[in-house]
Image (tube, rainbow, N blue to C red):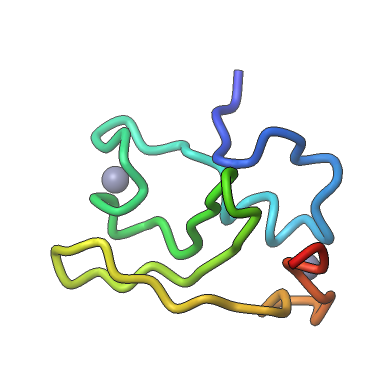
Length: 76
Ligand SMILES: [Zn+2]
Ligand SMILES: [Zn+2]
């Protein structure tokens, strides 16, 4: 079974975003700790963000999908 950060991956805009939110890493449970993980999804806030891998938990919020350009966070 594929683990993913998003509760409903079928609702995501494109395959690239689905893949980016999958958690396939055997080593890291936390996307912030995994250098392969580019995108973080905050379910509570319904926000998508680029993970800044500087050892902390910094993110850069994104309003559009970097792959297909679909507007994200439309509820906010
Ligand atoms: Zn997309
Ligand atoms: Zn990893």
